[in-house]
Length: 141
Image (cartoon, rainbow, N blue to C red; front, side, top):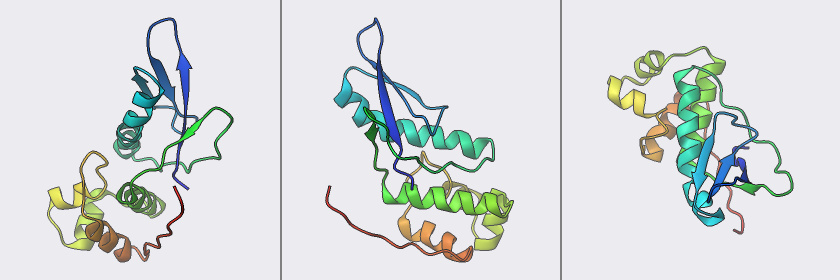
């Protein structure tokens, strides 16, 4: 659902650029493929913040194409994506979420801040307030 595929592009300069078809705003760079992969989660989370700033829903990931590498996001990041998209479906603002949860501005804002680590329990409580619940599955890596 939100395992985004990145692609690598070699330029004349040393290093690789990374891009993502599903998140066209994502642009990153790494010294080599392994470095790009290690930086990919940060690049994706930074890009997700752009969607929040623009008050736009975050797109779901499409199946990877040949030559792309799938990035598996942390569970809390995926939960935040679902929370944000649920808010967008209801035309909710951060202030609406804060009022619904009865929390202060900083606490509420961090629930949809992809550059801030939140406790899963807090995101889960926010999702519950919107009528959603988290269901996890585990698969072989």
